[in-house]
Length: 200
Length: 243
Image 1 (spheres, each protein chain N blue to C red):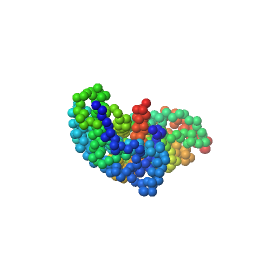
Image 2: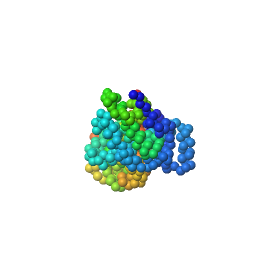
Image 3: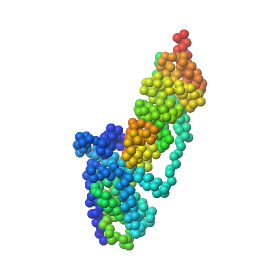
Image 4: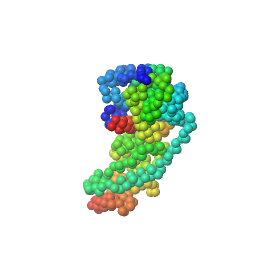
C-alpha cells in the first residue's frame, strides 16, 4: 500500500516569514492556544496510538511531541492557518510520529489501522528535521537555572512587563532586562551546542 | 548555523522588539529591509523565534502539570552551604595572590590587586540577583554589578554584597565610597569579610597617603600573612624615613 503525505505540509512555508497578522495572536495568547490544542486533540491522538498497538504512556508522549513540533512551526511562521488547520496539523504529526515510532521499534505490521492514514512513515525529511529540532529546543531549556526560567516564563509566556517582573523580584527594570538578555544568551548557547552535537 | 559567539544585547533587543511588535511602522520597514539582505540576521531571528516557542512550551507544560496535580512542587533548595564554600574559595584565591614586587614610591599600586570575585553557581534560586551582579563584576562591568546589588543592599544587605559592592566601587576608582562600605565591615570583627576589608581599607589609606592609619589597620591582620608583613615593613620603613 502506498501512502502519500501531501496533506501534512499544505500550509507549511519554507521561506523565512516575518511575524504576520495571522500568527500574531498566537504569540499574544500562547496559553489559550496551547490549552485549546491540548483539549481538542489529546484524546484523539491517544485513541489513535492505542488503537494502533501503543500504550497510554506512549500515546501521551507522542501527543506532547506532536504539539511541541506544531507549535515551533507555528511560532516560526512556517505554519500559517486558522485554529482548525492547526489542530489538523497536530493530528497529522501525531500519526506520522507514531508510525515512525512503530517502525523504529519493529512493531509496524499490517494489522495496524491505517484506513485513514495518508502518510508514509519515513518519507518526510522536513517533518523529521522539525521533530529533531523540537527535541533539541526542549533539551536546551533544561540547561537553564530556575531563576532564568522564572524570568523568561514571566516575560514570554505570561506576558508580564519588565516592571511587573522587577516588582515581584524586588529589583529594577534595568536589572531584569540585563538578566533576561543573559538568560536568553545562555539558552541560545545551549541550543547551538546541542544542535552542533546532533549534526556530527 | 550562525557563529557560536554570544549575540550582542543590542541585536538581541532589536530582534525582540521586532518579534514582540514593538517597532513603529518606519522602524519595522527598515528592519525588514535589513533582514532581507542579511542571512545571519535571518538565522538569528529564527533562533530567537524557536527559543521563545520552547520557553512557551516549557512554561505551558509546567502549568499543565500543576493544574493536573500530577507533579509535586519542586522544593526550593537553599544554597547556604554552597555560598559558604564559595566565600571560602574566594578568600583562598585572595590569600593565594602571587607575591608582588613592591614599589616603595607607590605602595598602593604595588599591593593593590582587584578582588577576583566569586564563582557563580549554575542554578541558584535564593542568590540569583547577587549571582547576576557577580557575572557583571567578573566581566569588569562594575557599574552594572552595583546596579544589580543596589536593591539587595537596601532590602537584604549581607556582608557578601556589601563587600563586593565596596570592591566594585574601588575598581571604578571611587575610593571614598569603597572606604565607607569597608568601614561598615570592619566594625564587625567576627564578619567573614573582616580581614579582607582591613586589607583593602588600609590600601585606600595608602592611596590617600595616610601611612599611620594604614599601619594601624594592617597590624590588626594575622601575623602569618606574608603579604601583610611585607607591606607593614615597608610602611614602617617609610614612616621611619619621614620622621
